[in-house]
Image (cartoon, rainbow, N blue to C red; front, side):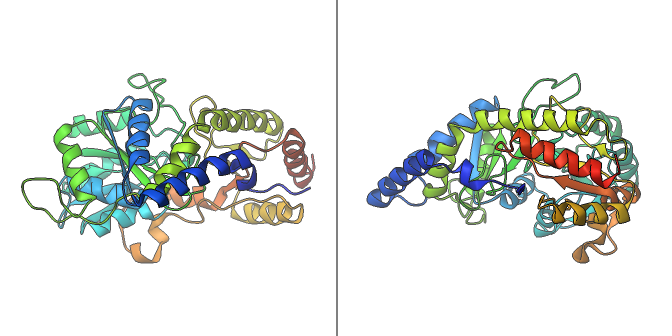
Length: 375
């Protein structure tokens, strides 16, 4: 039995394709390729869904991070705190703005650790912003970060990297039950095709409430045009074709998100008797977006052996992430904390999760895991 990591065939079914192609034909006939009615419609619905005043489509998720930092004046000489485990685009965005990355260690869920953040802020007074990532779709403890910043007495902004967050909910008392992206901070999304809400290529978005900040971001994504004081921006407009694709995908995303959550709950039940592995999202079954489904093995040797075993069984897995940012070549010598992050990366392996996994496939994954561990 084959168990794939993604299933784009089922996701992009014939009815969806027909709607998209009709929209594409309409756009091609109109000649309005860069921005258009689908951009406006999607931005309006995406902002409303997250109870935010504005959503701005941009070219990709990395641009969303970079523009958010630039709009807040982060530049040369500043430092930005980034979790030690994330896709390296988070750190790349900081360096693109000529600032410096400082790593913050993670907790057992892969999220930025508030205790590590408190230590790092004391050691680095140049930190002007923090960029927590809702890694795997598990909600980062934003409320705890706000308390750490308040305790520091400094003016430090929060930019939430929600590249894997769509469909998740906050934990904690302050934002409990609210959608990831609904806090008052700048919140960025990636619509890379593999995301829970994916485009047909690259696209991203920024959620913002402040009117002045919105106008600045809107100008920055379009070469700096649109504000009285001339500023240099960049070409980061989301083209009309991608916006149309996203708009039609948007109409079904809640249904697919619910199916993804049901798959995760089945996993939780099926894997409950395998004591040798740890489900990373075990305490976030109602709040995670389940963009990924990571488990922790005993150590790195066991992880690779399990991956190879499952591959022989035709079960796709992925190593998100193989090592902490401290060991990415461009970040050699980076400052900060990452001791637990290194241990976490040695043990983490992601099982396939998407809305179209069948009960038979999930049973097969679970039985294969039990076979590996001799259960």
